[in-house]
Length: 415
Length: 225
Image (cartoon, rainbow over all chains, first blue to last red; front, side, top):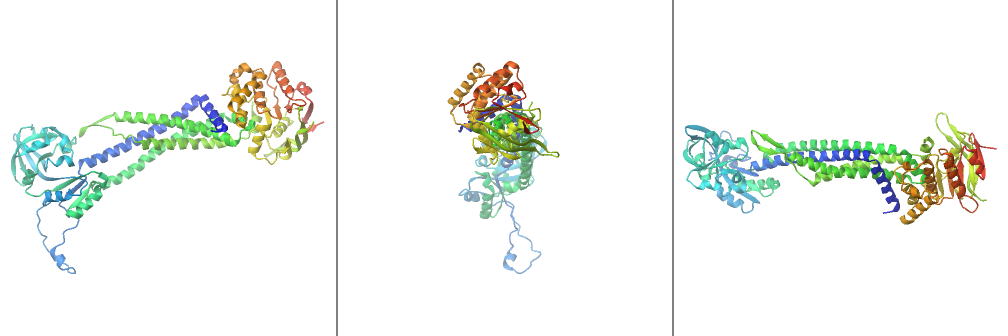
């Protein structure tokens, strides 16, 4: 470092330390700006990530159903390209995906993830003379843990308990409570198709979402097929991709290979994902506004210091300090305040984010939850860079003004 | 004696709705080793003349030549460099940097010039303070010193880069009699034949003027007979 640069830093440091009260005001101004920016970004991005994660976790990454995007071409369409045919009755097909295990075996040859079948049926569960409406889902307990969190949501019993008896059933915690059922009780399940079975409750699941826990029950896939009246068919193949962001591409390939409609989670929630763009815009606007306000604070402080240092500037210039050196002194003072502010701001931002993460929210519809916070280095880097840049700019203009002072103007008016 | 400073046809007019003429056609020299007193009534333009000689201000017309170098065409940075290398200033108000100690204030011009290393700067700063009777006050800040002590620190700072010309604007204007005598004695002692240093003092005090080698009286921006 050259002697002049050392002198510049030494003068700047002396000014900053000697004007401790002003320096602290400037430092706190920057720190509050950086701290709140970091906290806001942590909360906003944390809540968004949490929302997306819940969205992705609550549903399969890809859902393959027996729907088709285009109605199948009828034999008459294929035979007469130029003919316009009216009044044909379409061929009646049994609803459901045929040969699900063969399709799953084919998919598993290349699929970057896991796949599991399911069958849905509406039913009424009768216990002790009381009827409770429920949704019955037939699952494959061996494959299910690979595509959903059901295995981890079992509170009493286990998923494998479905194999324990011929007609075993797992009830959602709310459903079990409504029906007054405990593990080991026998219930009568009557499906919408009219089929009735007697089933033994082997486990209770708890997803933490009232709508799921109050309505859902699980049985073996074969039982589900009987209830739905579609032996050998399933309603849905659920795919969990290793990389959730690849779900759209994987869905396209599944659809091309099987002919069944494959819907990725992105497609299913296209509207929500679009809403996030607006949310991000709002978030960055708010964060930028906070940093802007902090920058004006820094500008104010540096301007005040510069104004109060007018006489010193005249002294230095009369001694022969070049203008660029005077300018550099005040820019470096500003940078020092900025750096101290951003370091304190990082700490403040971390502590506030941590504090926010400790706040517990309770809702009658969901389990108690805490504010989702993301500790991303990029938040700290962006807030720090903007604050530092703002400090330099805030220092530059008063510094330029200071450097342009004519010493004789000050000396003449000195008293 | 050869002329260290030559001023020819100096004019300084302040612009504005009603232009004010501060200096009105002054020709003058400052000889090497000379102690020159510029006197005159308040508002006569003596300080303005000093600022022009010290390159703190730019003449509206005319030329100031210092040590053989014409200065009217120099840009601000070059004039600043010349002030740093060749000139030393002592003002009525000490104009020390308040956050720095006496030692640091004296060292400032040397650090800005960058000719000496840190050790040499420290040693010379201490020597200058000791030679002006301020050895024990080296680490005090201006607010911890008396007016006379501060003015002596300002003189030490003016001498830091061993200038050929020291310009003093009412250097004793704020001092008591004893301190005034002390400061004047120091300024008087630094010049003389063979010293290589000239001192120009602007003063109201005829007693100070009486001790000068030569006196230049200014009235209404002109040299008065």
